[in-house]
Length: 87
Image (cartoon, rainbow, N blue to C red; front, side, top):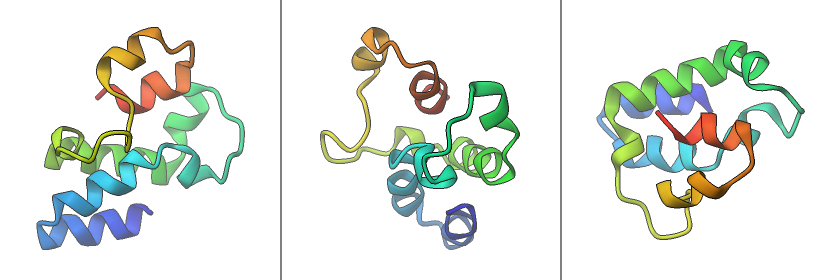
């Protein structure tokens, strides 16, 4: 996933980066349970988050439901989801 995002960044394709990021951290770790500190240390996770931040892909408008809306994150009791989607 990080390699695809890196190629998309080189091509200026922010939409592709936004869609991959919207899949959530689970797409990078195949559902392996991690806490936030462990997840942040996974190289592909760190790389994708850095690409998302550099390109502002987290601000790219996606169809409704593709990622949690900020107001939904406020009521989610999920530390990993909050960490992932709040950049």
